[in-house]
Structures are given as structure tokens and as C-alpha cells.
Image (cartoon, rainbow, N blue to C red; front, side):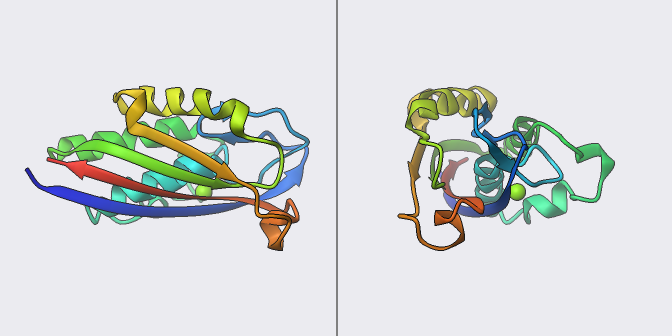
Length: 158
Ligand code: MG
């Protein structure tokens, strides 16, 4: 058996009056992500980690943000497509670990739902998908509630 690791990162600006969708879950908040898609930075980081593990490029190459096909798209669809790409090459996800950086709101109550949503799309047990969140201690653009960022790592096996 061979293994591959991948790393992903994403950041989106937050603006008043937009929907906030993270980890496939709608989170009630006054601000949401500015994006061509639904702005799910957590899923975008995860997609990039999975693509990166197989050197398949990045999410922008596969789902261009100037394409009408992806305007407002549910990022779970993008994740399903990335999962399909790695499966088509004979690989599967062993585990994923995602770190979300967001000042507000508190994410902890939504983490179980996010893990369940991601695990369902990926077709794996929930204990293979970790979601963690931290504030930025009020520092920088994320601390000032101007944006949300996410890092993801994955392990794939063939
Ligand atoms: Mg993104």
C-alpha cells in the first residue's frame, strides 16, 4: 500500500448580509463569505489538500471562478467531484484534519454537523474526518472579522 499526504489552504472575505456556509453547514450570522461559489472556505481547503496529495493541481484549475457552472454552487458538490477524481485513480481517503480560523461566531456547536456532512460526501466514517476551529485572538484581518480561513491536511491510500 502506498500513501500520499496533501495540504490545503483557503481564505474568504466576510461581508455583511451574505450567507455563511462552512463545512457544508449553514451557520446563522450577520456576515458571510464573498465568493463565486457558496464560499465554503473549509471545503475549498479540503478539496485542495485532496488534489494536492495526488499532484492534481488546485481547486481553481478544476472549478474556475469565472465559470457560470460554478456560480453560487454548493461546495459539497465540488468535494464530491474531487473525491470522485481520487477514487477514479484508485485512491481513497484515510483521514482528513481541518483547522478553521474564524473570530465569530463560535463554531463548536456546528462541528458535529460539519463532520457528518463531510463524511457523508466523502463516503467515510465520521471518525476519519476532524474539524477544529480557533479564533485569531482578535489579531489581524481574521481577528477583526474581515475574513475566514481554513487549513486542511489529508492522508490518502491506494
Ligand atoms: Mg475558496
